Image (cartoon, rainbow, N blue to C red; front, side, top):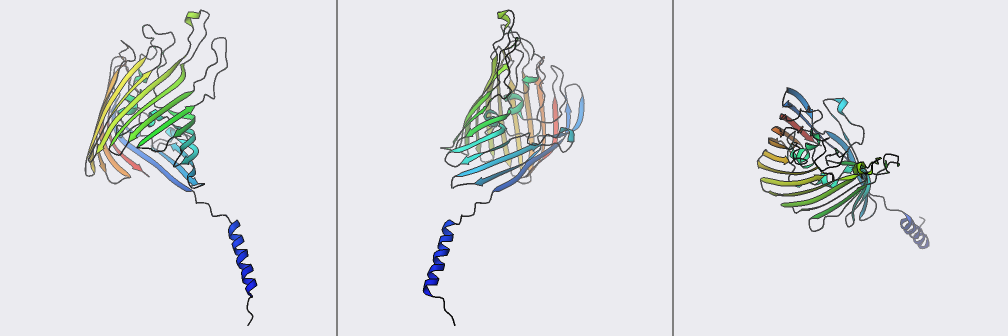
Length: 381
Protein backbone atom coordinates (compact mmCIF):
# COMPACT_ATOMS: atom_id res chain seq x y z
CA UNK A 1 0.00 0.00 0.00
CA UNK A 2 1.36 3.41 -0.95
CA UNK A 3 1.24 6.19 1.65
CA UNK A 4 1.24 9.95 1.06
CA UNK A 5 4.33 11.52 2.55
CA UNK A 6 4.17 14.07 5.32
CA UNK A 7 5.66 16.70 3.01
CA UNK A 8 2.90 16.11 0.46
CA UNK A 9 0.20 16.52 3.12
CA UNK A 10 1.77 19.79 4.25
CA UNK A 11 1.96 21.04 0.65
CA UNK A 12 -1.69 20.22 -0.01
CA UNK A 13 -2.78 21.97 3.20
CA UNK A 14 -0.80 25.08 2.27
CA UNK A 15 -2.37 25.14 -1.20
CA UNK A 16 -5.89 24.85 0.31
CA UNK A 17 -5.17 27.64 2.76
CA UNK A 18 -3.84 29.83 -0.05
CA UNK A 19 -6.94 29.20 -2.16
CA UNK A 20 -9.23 30.05 0.77
CA UNK A 21 -7.36 33.30 1.34
CA UNK A 22 -7.89 34.53 -2.21
CA UNK A 23 -11.46 33.22 -2.64
CA UNK A 24 -14.15 35.88 -2.23
CA UNK A 25 -17.04 35.28 0.14
CA UNK A 26 -20.31 34.97 -1.77
CA UNK A 27 -22.25 38.26 -1.97
CA UNK A 28 -25.54 38.34 -0.07
CA UNK A 29 -28.46 37.58 -2.36
CA UNK A 30 -30.53 40.65 -3.26
CA UNK A 31 -33.94 40.95 -1.65
CA UNK A 32 -36.65 41.71 -4.25
CA UNK A 33 -40.32 42.18 -3.35
CA UNK A 34 -43.45 42.54 -5.46
CA UNK A 35 -46.08 44.66 -3.70
CA UNK A 36 -49.16 46.73 -4.36
CA UNK A 37 -52.69 47.78 -3.51
CA UNK A 38 -55.96 47.29 -5.37
CA UNK A 39 -58.90 49.35 -4.10
CA UNK A 40 -62.23 49.48 -5.91
CA UNK A 41 -65.69 50.65 -4.85
CA UNK A 42 -69.25 50.78 -6.10
CA UNK A 43 -70.21 54.42 -5.68
CA UNK A 44 -73.46 56.37 -5.64
CA UNK A 45 -72.38 59.99 -6.10
CA UNK A 46 -73.64 63.45 -6.89
CA UNK A 47 -71.92 66.57 -8.19
CA UNK A 48 -74.60 68.61 -6.44
CA UNK A 49 -76.83 68.57 -9.52
CA UNK A 50 -76.79 65.10 -11.08
CA UNK A 51 -76.86 61.71 -9.36
CA UNK A 52 -74.74 58.89 -10.79
CA UNK A 53 -73.70 55.31 -10.06
CA UNK A 54 -70.09 54.48 -10.82
CA UNK A 55 -67.28 52.01 -10.30
CA UNK A 56 -64.34 53.90 -8.82
CA UNK A 57 -60.65 53.08 -8.60
CA UNK A 58 -58.66 54.56 -5.72
CA UNK A 59 -54.98 54.76 -6.66
CA UNK A 60 -54.53 51.04 -7.30
CA UNK A 61 -50.87 50.33 -7.91
CA UNK A 62 -48.19 47.68 -8.08
CA UNK A 63 -44.46 47.87 -7.71
CA UNK A 64 -41.21 46.04 -7.31
CA UNK A 65 -38.53 47.03 -4.81
CA UNK A 66 -35.23 45.57 -3.83
CA UNK A 67 -32.25 45.86 -1.54
CA UNK A 68 -28.75 44.41 -1.84
CA UNK A 69 -26.26 44.59 1.00
CA UNK A 70 -22.81 45.57 -0.24
CA UNK A 71 -21.10 45.84 3.15
CA UNK A 72 -21.95 45.40 6.81
CA UNK A 73 -23.92 48.65 7.02
CA UNK A 74 -24.48 49.77 3.42
CA UNK A 75 -27.09 48.60 0.91
CA UNK A 76 -28.19 49.59 -2.55
CA UNK A 77 -31.96 50.03 -2.94
CA UNK A 78 -34.41 50.54 -5.79
CA UNK A 79 -38.17 50.87 -6.32
CA UNK A 80 -40.36 51.03 -9.43
CA UNK A 81 -44.07 51.73 -8.85
CA UNK A 82 -46.92 52.14 -11.33
CA UNK A 83 -50.59 53.11 -11.00
CA UNK A 84 -53.32 51.24 -12.85
CA UNK A 85 -57.11 51.09 -13.05
CA UNK A 86 -58.67 47.61 -12.99
CA UNK A 87 -62.02 49.00 -14.16
CA UNK A 88 -60.81 51.21 -17.02
CA UNK A 89 -57.57 50.61 -18.92
CA UNK A 90 -57.69 54.16 -20.29
CA UNK A 91 -57.03 55.38 -16.72
CA UNK A 92 -53.95 53.16 -16.25
CA UNK A 93 -50.67 55.01 -16.06
CA UNK A 94 -47.26 54.73 -17.68
CA UNK A 95 -44.60 52.53 -16.12
CA UNK A 96 -42.90 54.07 -13.06
CA UNK A 97 -45.34 57.00 -12.85
CA UNK A 98 -45.45 56.66 -9.04
CA UNK A 99 -42.58 56.61 -6.51
CA UNK A 100 -39.64 55.14 -8.42
CA UNK A 101 -35.99 55.63 -7.51
CA UNK A 102 -32.53 54.21 -6.87
CA UNK A 103 -30.42 54.92 -3.82
CA UNK A 104 -28.17 53.98 -0.92
CA UNK A 105 -29.26 52.96 2.57
CA UNK A 106 -27.16 52.90 5.73
CA UNK A 107 -28.38 52.03 9.22
CA UNK A 108 -26.07 54.65 10.73
CA UNK A 109 -26.02 57.34 8.01
CA UNK A 110 -29.56 57.28 6.61
CA UNK A 111 -30.96 56.87 3.10
CA UNK A 112 -30.29 58.82 -0.10
CA UNK A 113 -32.58 58.35 -3.13
CA UNK A 114 -32.68 59.82 -6.65
CA UNK A 115 -35.71 59.65 -8.95
CA UNK A 116 -39.41 60.32 -8.34
CA UNK A 117 -40.93 60.40 -4.86
CA UNK A 118 -43.59 62.06 -2.71
CA UNK A 119 -42.34 65.29 -1.14
CA UNK A 120 -41.83 65.25 2.66
CA UNK A 121 -44.91 67.44 3.19
CA UNK A 122 -47.14 64.95 1.37
CA UNK A 123 -45.58 62.00 3.21
CA UNK A 124 -46.22 63.52 6.66
CA UNK A 125 -49.42 61.78 7.84
CA UNK A 126 -48.98 60.57 11.40
CA UNK A 127 -52.26 59.00 12.57
CA UNK A 128 -54.36 61.72 10.90
CA UNK A 129 -54.80 60.16 7.43
CA UNK A 130 -57.03 57.14 8.10
CA UNK A 131 -59.92 57.07 5.60
CA UNK A 132 -60.44 54.93 2.50
CA UNK A 133 -62.58 55.79 -0.52
CA UNK A 134 -63.55 59.38 -1.28
CA UNK A 135 -63.86 60.81 2.22
CA UNK A 136 -60.18 61.46 3.03
CA UNK A 137 -59.72 65.11 4.05
CA UNK A 138 -55.90 65.18 3.97
CA UNK A 139 -55.68 65.49 0.20
CA UNK A 140 -58.73 67.68 -0.42
CA UNK A 141 -58.38 70.04 2.56
CA UNK A 142 -54.84 70.03 4.01
CA UNK A 143 -53.05 69.76 0.65
CA UNK A 144 -55.35 72.30 -1.02
CA UNK A 145 -56.79 70.22 -3.84
CA UNK A 146 -60.29 71.44 -3.03
CA UNK A 147 -59.45 75.15 -3.03
CA UNK A 148 -57.36 74.61 -6.17
CA UNK A 149 -60.61 73.94 -8.08
CA UNK A 150 -62.15 77.23 -6.93
CA UNK A 151 -64.07 79.42 -9.37
CA UNK A 152 -62.11 82.44 -8.10
CA UNK A 153 -58.75 80.92 -9.02
CA UNK A 154 -58.27 83.54 -11.76
CA UNK A 155 -59.54 86.50 -9.72
CA UNK A 156 -56.91 88.96 -8.51
CA UNK A 157 -57.34 89.81 -4.81
CA UNK A 158 -57.71 93.46 -3.80
CA UNK A 159 -54.20 94.86 -3.54
CA UNK A 160 -52.79 91.88 -5.40
CA UNK A 161 -50.66 91.92 -8.53
CA UNK A 162 -51.95 91.40 -12.06
CA UNK A 163 -51.42 87.86 -13.25
CA UNK A 164 -51.49 86.28 -9.78
CA UNK A 165 -54.27 83.84 -10.56
CA UNK A 166 -51.93 80.91 -9.86
CA UNK A 167 -52.88 79.19 -6.63
CA UNK A 168 -52.13 75.51 -6.60
CA UNK A 169 -52.22 72.47 -4.39
CA UNK A 170 -49.20 70.94 -2.63
CA UNK A 171 -50.07 67.23 -2.88
CA UNK A 172 -46.79 66.75 -4.71
CA UNK A 173 -45.10 63.67 -6.14
CA UNK A 174 -41.96 65.23 -7.58
CA UNK A 175 -39.82 64.05 -10.48
CA UNK A 176 -36.07 64.77 -10.83
CA UNK A 177 -35.75 64.53 -7.05
CA UNK A 178 -32.90 63.89 -4.65
CA UNK A 179 -33.98 63.14 -1.07
CA UNK A 180 -32.19 62.37 2.18
CA UNK A 181 -33.96 60.46 4.98
CA UNK A 182 -32.18 60.33 8.34
CA UNK A 183 -31.98 57.25 10.56
CA UNK A 184 -34.55 57.15 13.35
CA UNK A 185 -32.85 58.70 16.38
CA UNK A 186 -34.73 59.11 19.69
CA UNK A 187 -37.94 58.38 17.73
CA UNK A 188 -37.25 61.30 15.34
CA UNK A 189 -36.81 61.14 11.53
CA UNK A 190 -35.76 64.13 9.38
CA UNK A 191 -36.18 64.42 5.60
CA UNK A 192 -34.76 66.87 3.04
CA UNK A 193 -35.78 66.89 -0.64
CA UNK A 194 -34.68 69.03 -3.58
CA UNK A 195 -35.69 69.06 -7.22
CA UNK A 196 -33.72 71.25 -9.63
CA UNK A 197 -35.53 72.67 -12.62
CA UNK A 198 -34.33 70.80 -15.70
CA UNK A 199 -36.60 72.94 -17.86
CA UNK A 200 -35.36 76.35 -16.71
CA UNK A 201 -36.33 78.91 -19.33
CA UNK A 202 -34.22 81.16 -21.52
CA UNK A 203 -34.72 84.92 -21.21
CA UNK A 204 -37.02 86.53 -23.77
CA UNK A 205 -38.25 90.04 -24.45
CA UNK A 206 -41.32 89.39 -22.26
CA UNK A 207 -39.86 87.26 -19.46
CA UNK A 208 -36.48 86.89 -17.73
CA UNK A 209 -34.91 83.47 -17.32
CA UNK A 210 -36.44 81.62 -14.40
CA UNK A 211 -36.61 78.16 -12.86
CA UNK A 212 -39.22 76.34 -10.79
CA UNK A 213 -36.96 74.41 -8.45
CA UNK A 214 -38.66 72.84 -5.43
CA UNK A 215 -37.43 72.32 -1.85
CA UNK A 216 -39.07 70.43 0.99
CA UNK A 217 -38.22 69.23 4.50
CA UNK A 218 -39.90 67.58 7.46
CA UNK A 219 -39.25 66.43 11.00
CA UNK A 220 -41.43 63.76 12.62
CA UNK A 221 -41.58 62.23 16.08
CA UNK A 222 -43.31 58.87 16.57
CA UNK A 223 -42.86 56.59 19.58
CA UNK A 224 -45.67 54.22 18.64
CA UNK A 225 -48.18 55.99 20.88
CA UNK A 226 -47.69 59.71 20.24
CA UNK A 227 -46.73 61.33 16.97
CA UNK A 228 -46.07 64.89 15.86
CA UNK A 229 -44.60 66.40 12.72
CA UNK A 230 -43.79 69.62 10.91
CA UNK A 231 -43.12 70.04 7.17
CA UNK A 232 -42.41 72.83 4.71
CA UNK A 233 -42.40 73.06 0.92
CA UNK A 234 -41.64 75.77 -1.61
CA UNK A 235 -41.59 75.92 -5.40
CA UNK A 236 -39.98 78.91 -7.09
CA UNK A 237 -41.81 81.03 -9.67
CA UNK A 238 -45.18 79.27 -9.62
CA UNK A 239 -46.31 82.77 -10.61
CA UNK A 240 -43.91 83.30 -13.49
CA UNK A 241 -41.95 86.56 -13.81
CA UNK A 242 -42.77 88.79 -16.76
CA UNK A 243 -41.36 91.96 -18.31
CA UNK A 244 -43.76 94.68 -19.43
CA UNK A 245 -43.19 97.89 -21.37
CA UNK A 246 -44.46 99.71 -18.29
CA UNK A 247 -42.28 98.62 -15.34
CA UNK A 248 -45.22 98.90 -12.93
CA UNK A 249 -46.96 96.07 -14.81
CA UNK A 250 -43.99 93.70 -14.66
CA UNK A 251 -44.23 90.70 -12.32
CA UNK A 252 -41.11 89.60 -10.42
CA UNK A 253 -42.23 85.98 -9.92
CA UNK A 254 -43.54 84.39 -6.73
CA UNK A 255 -43.03 81.07 -4.96
CA UNK A 256 -45.86 78.81 -3.79
CA UNK A 257 -45.07 78.01 -0.16
CA UNK A 258 -46.74 75.68 2.32
CA UNK A 259 -46.35 74.53 5.90
CA UNK A 260 -48.04 71.56 7.56
CA UNK A 261 -48.22 70.27 11.13
CA UNK A 262 -49.65 67.02 12.48
CA UNK A 263 -50.35 65.72 15.98
CA UNK A 264 -51.84 62.37 16.90
CA UNK A 265 -51.99 59.33 19.15
CA UNK A 266 -52.71 55.62 18.98
CA UNK A 267 -53.80 53.99 22.24
CA UNK A 268 -55.32 50.54 22.24
CA UNK A 269 -58.46 50.54 20.11
CA UNK A 270 -58.34 54.33 19.61
CA UNK A 271 -56.54 56.31 16.93
CA UNK A 272 -56.84 60.08 16.51
CA UNK A 273 -55.09 62.91 14.71
CA UNK A 274 -55.06 66.62 13.93
CA UNK A 275 -53.50 68.41 10.95
CA UNK A 276 -53.03 72.07 10.03
CA UNK A 277 -51.61 73.73 6.91
CA UNK A 278 -51.15 77.06 5.20
CA UNK A 279 -50.66 77.54 1.45
CA UNK A 280 -49.45 80.93 0.21
CA UNK A 281 -48.68 82.15 -3.33
CA UNK A 282 -46.88 85.25 -1.99
CA UNK A 283 -49.03 87.62 -4.03
CA UNK A 284 -52.25 87.91 -2.08
CA UNK A 285 -53.71 84.40 -1.99
CA UNK A 286 -53.40 82.23 1.11
CA UNK A 287 -55.47 79.51 2.75
CA UNK A 288 -55.45 78.21 6.31
CA UNK A 289 -56.64 74.61 6.56
CA UNK A 290 -57.33 72.13 9.34
CA UNK A 291 -58.75 68.66 9.89
CA UNK A 292 -59.45 66.21 12.73
CA UNK A 293 -59.87 62.44 12.47
CA UNK A 294 -60.57 59.50 14.73
CA UNK A 295 -61.02 55.73 14.61
CA UNK A 296 -62.18 53.08 17.07
CA UNK A 297 -61.72 49.32 16.59
CA UNK A 298 -64.07 46.68 17.97
CA UNK A 299 -62.48 43.45 16.88
CA UNK A 300 -62.52 43.33 13.06
CA UNK A 301 -64.93 46.30 12.85
CA UNK A 302 -63.33 49.77 12.70
CA UNK A 303 -65.40 52.95 12.83
CA UNK A 304 -63.79 56.08 11.34
CA UNK A 305 -64.62 59.75 10.82
CA UNK A 306 -62.88 62.94 9.73
CA UNK A 307 -63.78 66.58 9.19
CA UNK A 308 -61.77 69.38 7.58
CA UNK A 309 -62.12 72.98 6.45
CA UNK A 310 -60.24 75.29 4.05
CA UNK A 311 -60.50 79.07 4.37
CA UNK A 312 -61.05 81.59 1.56
CA UNK A 313 -57.96 82.20 -0.57
CA UNK A 314 -58.43 85.93 0.09
CA UNK A 315 -61.07 88.07 1.77
CA UNK A 316 -64.28 88.02 -0.24
CA UNK A 317 -63.22 85.19 -2.54
CA UNK A 318 -66.03 82.94 -1.22
CA UNK A 319 -64.05 79.85 -2.26
CA UNK A 320 -63.86 78.19 1.16
CA UNK A 321 -65.13 74.63 1.68
CA UNK A 322 -65.54 71.83 4.21
CA UNK A 323 -65.43 68.03 3.97
CA UNK A 324 -67.04 65.54 6.35
CA UNK A 325 -66.79 61.76 6.08
CA UNK A 326 -67.74 58.64 8.06
CA UNK A 327 -66.69 55.06 7.39
CA UNK A 328 -67.09 51.51 8.74
CA UNK A 329 -64.41 48.92 7.90
CA UNK A 330 -64.52 45.15 8.30
CA UNK A 331 -60.92 43.95 8.45
CA UNK A 332 -60.70 40.33 7.34
CA UNK A 333 -56.91 40.29 7.80
CA UNK A 334 -53.89 42.55 7.28
CA UNK A 335 -54.35 42.34 3.51
CA UNK A 336 -58.10 42.50 2.94
CA UNK A 337 -60.61 45.14 4.10
CA UNK A 338 -64.26 45.66 3.21
CA UNK A 339 -65.76 49.09 3.85
CA UNK A 340 -68.74 51.36 3.51
CA UNK A 341 -68.36 55.16 3.62
CA UNK A 342 -70.35 58.35 3.14
CA UNK A 343 -68.93 61.85 2.70
CA UNK A 344 -70.01 65.31 1.63
CA UNK A 345 -68.23 68.50 0.53
CA UNK A 346 -69.87 71.86 1.28
CA UNK A 347 -68.72 74.61 -1.11
CA UNK A 348 -69.17 78.33 -0.69
CA UNK A 349 -70.71 80.16 -3.67
CA UNK A 350 -67.48 80.38 -5.72
CA UNK A 351 -65.89 77.10 -4.63
CA UNK A 352 -65.75 74.02 -6.86
CA UNK A 353 -64.15 71.56 -4.45
CA UNK A 354 -64.68 67.88 -5.26
CA UNK A 355 -63.19 64.47 -4.48
CA UNK A 356 -59.82 63.84 -6.10
CA UNK A 357 -58.99 60.40 -4.64
CA UNK A 358 -60.79 58.50 -7.42
CA UNK A 359 -60.03 58.55 -11.14
CA UNK A 360 -63.13 60.28 -12.49
CA UNK A 361 -65.35 62.02 -9.95
CA UNK A 362 -67.51 64.59 -11.81
CA UNK A 363 -66.51 68.23 -11.29
CA UNK A 364 -69.33 70.36 -9.81
CA UNK A 365 -70.46 73.84 -10.74
CA UNK A 366 -69.52 76.64 -8.35
CA UNK A 367 -71.36 76.49 -5.03
CA UNK A 368 -72.68 72.94 -5.51
CA UNK A 369 -72.11 70.27 -2.84
CA UNK A 370 -70.79 66.86 -3.98
CA UNK A 371 -71.58 63.67 -2.05
CA UNK A 372 -70.34 60.09 -2.30
CA UNK A 373 -71.55 56.76 -0.88
CA UNK A 374 -68.97 53.97 -1.32
CA UNK A 375 -69.02 50.20 -0.83
CA UNK A 376 -65.46 49.10 -1.42
CA UNK A 377 -62.75 46.45 -1.18
CA UNK A 378 -59.08 47.11 -0.53
CA UNK A 379 -56.53 44.33 -1.06
CA UNK A 380 -52.86 44.84 -0.22
CA UNK A 381 -50.16 42.46 -1.35
